[in-house]
Image 1: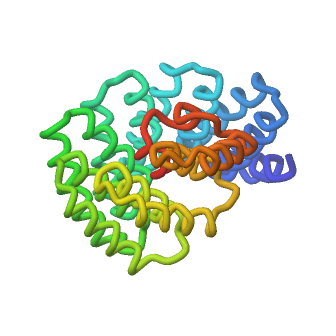
Image 2: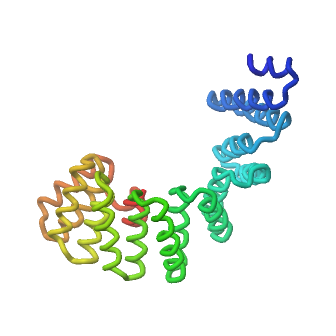
Length: 270
């Protein structure tokens, strides 16, 4: 309020825009939606800013007003075409409606602006996977480029390995896993992902168990690891050990693969 009073006294529209935006956020956090909307609009009247449009868009999105949110994100981009947050949230909205063409357009734009935007890379790869063979090849090209900009990012290595797997190039996938494990230490997802791959694709239960155990040593409270380890143990006909792991998964809130994602690859890459 003090900043707002100073802005009015100084007749500074930029300062008033910032003050009103802060007031809007305070009211929004307190659940006062009418006042929040009012101050966001007053902020935009004082000075249209890309950041304020994004905040107002988020405000609408939280209330499931998708059309209003989309318009605000588009207004944000009209002011600042390189606003990656606006591009990303627009892309998520398009994905929700299965408008893959527009989603891909915005996700590619984000990566052009920021090659290290891992969330955009993840969503683009998962979207390209929907297009099967052609999409797999596009995802492969994208990830080969992304790994040069993000050489120590475990998630990108996982996505690259899974893309090779989808292309039925198991040896290439195995090579990605091994390279990642050599260069990135302490990430349970790499061990867990490699364990599932070794068990299901390479039919190597001994090596798979080693990596399941390494994953659990790094992240013992991850119910999904216990679940997939238990599932593997069932396949190896070690019922007592399997029950122990599945019970641990249940206690940690993970009772089946559908709890977190539709596929094992998506679960691990999150």
